[in-house]
Amino acid sequence: MDVLVVDHPLAKDRLSTMRDARTDSATFRAALHDLTVMLMYEATRDAPVRTERIHTPVARTDAYRLANPPLLVPVLRAGLGMADQAHKLIPAAQMGFVGLARDEQTLHPTPYMESLPEDLAGRPVLVLDPMLATGGSMVHTIRLLTDRGATDVTAICALAAPEGIARLEDSGLPVRVVTASIDQRLNDSGFIVPGLGDAGDRQYGAI
Ligand code: PRP
Image 1 (cartoon, rainbow, N blue to C red):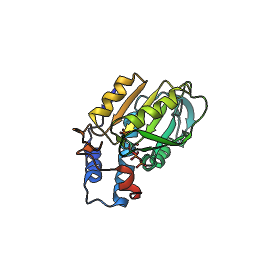
Image 2 (image 1 turned 90 degrees about the vertical axis):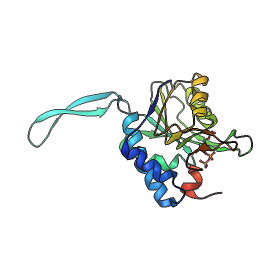
Image 3 (image 1 turned 60 degrees about the horizontal axis):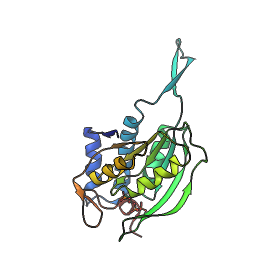
Image 4 (image 1 turned 30 degrees about the vertical axis):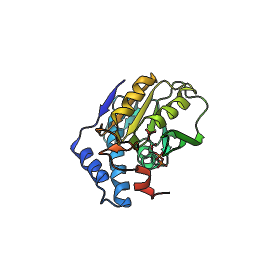
């Protein structure tokens, strides 16, 4: 499984802002927006393009467009904080939604919403979730996608735990991961260490 760690100074800066416990919600959301743009750039680096001829005010030239715009799938709640930025970068993308809440005791994801196109054969899919912890939420989401025929899935995560990466790898699902950091480990409560806490709570408040 391909794992790309976006090790860019600006990505490190925004992730550090997100990690800092003193960062308020508005600043956290702004940092996640910026980081999403950086992760999206790298995730789409090899996306196929089609060419067309256009006129600039001066001459004819080639123009380049994404040949096959992806489906974007934010995982609610926390992934919502990445959705608008990703969509701005790829306005032609369609958006699907998956709602999952991780049970705090069992750490298993409880699904409460899914809104996805029926047929995903031949379409790249970018799953947006700030956190890959145990990997349970991501495995559940990718199975929903592969059940609909997806074979080209990229998980875009602000940060990841080694346990989550290993879980995805063991699943054999057709996924690659783009993240700004692979942290040290999970703690006994299933939180990434050092991590950034709960990305949903940090953006929207605890429920
Ligand atoms: C968090 C996070 C991921 C999931 C990661 O969401 O945003 O979706 O947990 O954990 P996992 O890899 O162990 O499954 P949470 O369930 O807390 O919901 P929220 O986004 O509504 O806060």
